[in-house]
View 1 (spheres, one colour):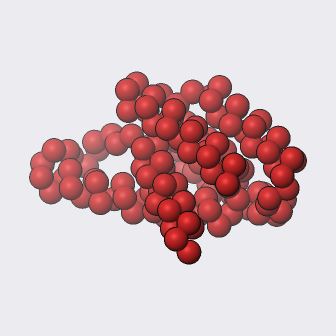
View 2 (cartoon, one colour):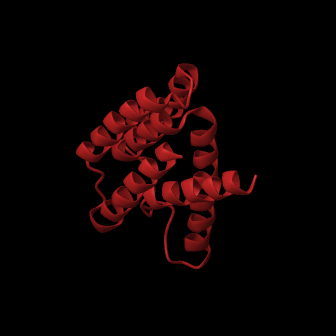
Length: 142
């Protein structure tokens, strides 16, 4: 629960900066990783295997950023990495799938109603926040 709150706060901060300036600050991600490590050591709520597997999607996004010449920015990729470290495998995958679905719907809306083109840049962090909120609410219900 504490990790979800921490990740939610980080996503709110990064969403604001992503929308306003298209930047995600490394210092925020660094603080997130440090606090997540402290919380993991204090509460031992996840196994180390889940934590290690949780960072795999972030590593994949970092590779995607490099290969695509930053179609997905490095800030987004490192933020996904830190979310995976904080939340573990199951929760980060649920967050990512929900986020990609929501951003896909938004992109379709923009293209269909001629508010955007194929190359229109969309800030991704607000959709990560949306994915975290949706999957968090789903976890509360179930």
